[in-house]
Length: 216
Ligand code: PCA
Image 1 (cartoon, rainbow, N blue to C red):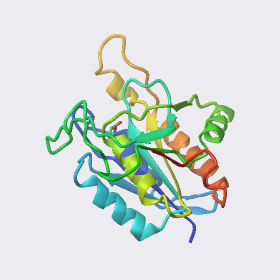
Image 2 (tube, rainbow, N blue to C red):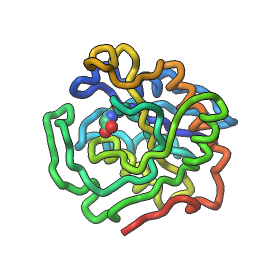
Image 3 (cartoon, rainbow, N blue to C red):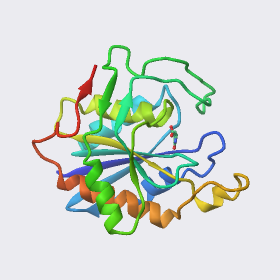
Image 4 (cartoon, rainbow, N blue to C red):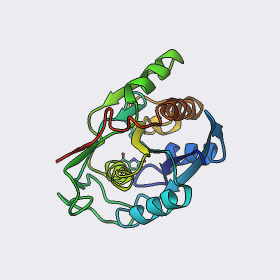
């Protein structure tokens, strides 16, 4: 079966309505580019996230894993290029944990590059009138951790894995001071996620390591 796993996150800190989780719920059950999409909402919990992600991957055996999360302040959707083996949290997770300079996986490589076709996705966004870019840091919080885990868990499989950060919703941006940070509507963000999926499935195949591999 040809399946794509798209994850978003639930609430954390000031992000009560996390648009990444809402989009994962919206596209669960969709069919994109001949692939069945499974959408799952992950907890912003540094201890629980690995099991929840691993169970979702085991249950769905996806060809593509796309981790998404919100990054308030970013101007546009961003495909992340690299996941680092570092948890250095700027804010606590939902259980109040704030790891400092801890690895994601104790004996894991220092970093993984994405195996998603990030430049092709940005090009697809551009063609659809959606601004977007390739980012060179996913930070050191839950999104980086989950991106790292998605790559680690699919490293010796044929699955491609990567991470997409999305900007805040307009409702959230209005709360965030003056001038407010950039924002995009939920519909536009969902379209960006759908295009990331439809472009990524075109690149499923044996040339997995093009644009990706472990650095250590
Ligand atoms: N964004 C956070 C974690 C959960 C989310 O949606 C991040 O960028 O790490």
